[in-house]
Image (tube, rainbow, N blue to C red):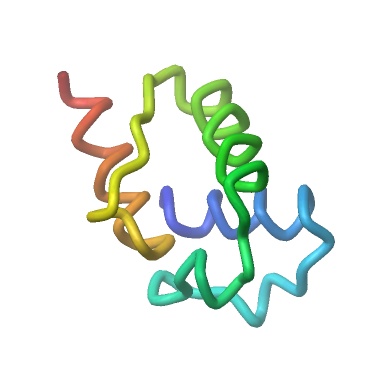
Amino acid sequence: MIVERIIQLLAEQYDMDPSTLSAESSFEDMSFDSLDVAEMVMTLEDEYNVHLEMSSDIKTIGDLAKYIEAQQKK
């Protein structure tokens, strides 16, 4: 599932404990700055072969997973 893969990628890329992350984890709670978000977007674009545009509607890992699923259906 996409949520689990995003968690795995974030944990690896940012040296986080994956057990502390869930679909409800927000990027604000993870203290992501704009550079962190940009790096995350590039990683996920490569992983899922989609184009991501972050918006204020995408606040959590779950929101991001839903957005990626929608992009894959296009």
